[in-house]
Structures are given as C-alpha cells and as structure tokens.
Image 1: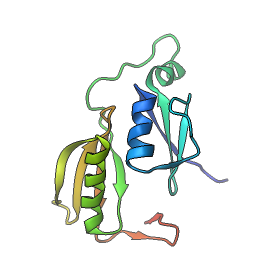
Image 2 (image 1 turned 135 degrees about the horizontal axis):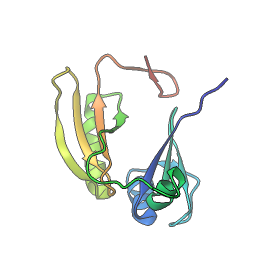
Image 3 (image 1 turned 120 degrees about the vertical axis):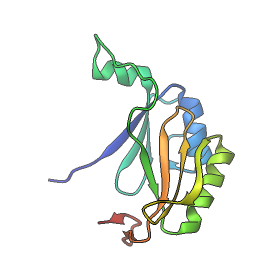
Length: 142
C-alpha cells in the first residue's frame, strides 16, 4: 500500500501565506486564486498544504478546538543539496518577507544550516548535510 504524506499548515491569512510560499519562495502549485479555501503545493515526496488555521482547529475538534500559542515543538525541514543553497534560500526568504531566526552558520553536527519563520510563525530549518544523498527526482535518500 502506498503511503502519501502531506504536511498541513494552519495559516491565519491565506493571501499572505500564498504571497510568501507561492509568489516569494516559488513553491509550485495549481492555485491561481489569492484566497482559496485550501492550497496544495507540489514538493518532492511529501506534499505541502496551506489551510485556514481556525478551520483546521475546528476540524480537529468542533467543540474544543486547540489553541495555538508560541513554539509548538516542531520545525519543518528544507534540505538542500549544496552548502551554498542554504545562503540562497535565506536570501529568498528575506526577500519574500520571512523572518530569519538563525543566520546561516556551521552546525555542531557538521553541516551548515539556518532557521527562518514564515508569516504565521512556523519555523523552518534550511540545512545542508554533507552525508545526505538525493535521488534523480531530488528526493532525500536514507
């Protein structure tokens, strides 16, 4: 049985999130609208989705929707093939309006990385790991 994985981010403002991910970072999508009810992005392997935060919370529990505040103990990973790509992604994030949480630097584990927050405060690590290999489709291989 095939397993399909999708990461869904609950966003406070769909227009702002689309401007950041689609228009700023260049994530590929079929969404042409600026305020769709949901938007999926074509990313290698795992699919990436934006969904209104209040609707996502109600979907989890209609009677007692979870409240979001602060760091939730989860980050998203943006793995790159080359060390220089970390700097390139961070430049793109700055231009798109993201917040740089940690500037690009050598990591204690031997790679090179940085962290940014998207307009809804979700933290992403952009990382180059010397031992990571990618297949012909750009998917990370373990």
